[in-house]
Length: 274
View 1 (cartoon, helix red, strand yellow):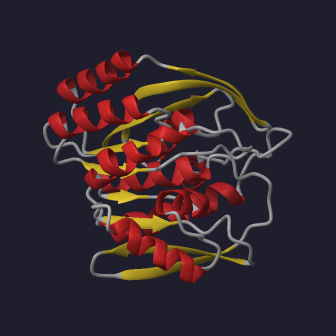
View 2 (cartoon, rainbow, N blue to C red; view 1 turned 60 degrees about the vertical axis):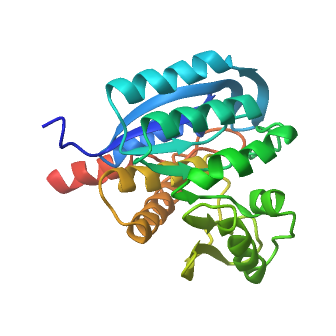
View 3 (cartoon, rainbow, N blue to C red; view 1 turned 135 degrees about the vertical axis):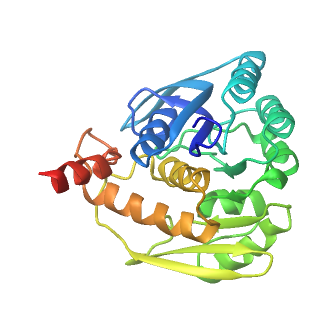
């Protein structure tokens, strides 16, 4: 049974004390979607819905060891990276993934700035991300500002998203999903691109302040679906649907950017059983 089980997801990311983003959102998402979540914590953030109030980086050798022991013992069908914070952590993650999980799907969410504006990736680490980790990725999931930082281009329109996606494919990843939530408009456009194809996915913008952790949640949902055998486009589409419902049913917690309802799938199943 254990040799055949799919759905193991190793999450390499930072912790969010408020529970809306980071490792906490990742674990909730993978679990809600039927996967098995493991973690390698890269940083502890002092965080709530109002912002990031402090960051404590985990020593690189401890991050590396977390990755190594989980992959060597349990293994992974997919790996998802979020907040990596430093070039040293990026390099350690890339080395351990290449050594111990070369066949696992790799979802790279290039987390750079928190919803409240705090920097979550050191400026000198961007080059390490582009040269060391992105080329290993099955898919990367930058939002518009992150795509702009990675490409050096403005990403303010749908055409900008398409151009940035093409540039990012040039870094060596298999696919790119450039999210359009930061671009104004009543409709959100996400651009999914590979070397062969480019597709625009759209959804109506939800008028809400409860969007904390949407990027983490989307990337983890993609990883969970890939880990369970979904094809890439199928995984992206299903993940977008999951996040859309998680926003629509958000619990309304906090005074700032509130968290999503990661557990809506479980609640829906309970409602069906009743």
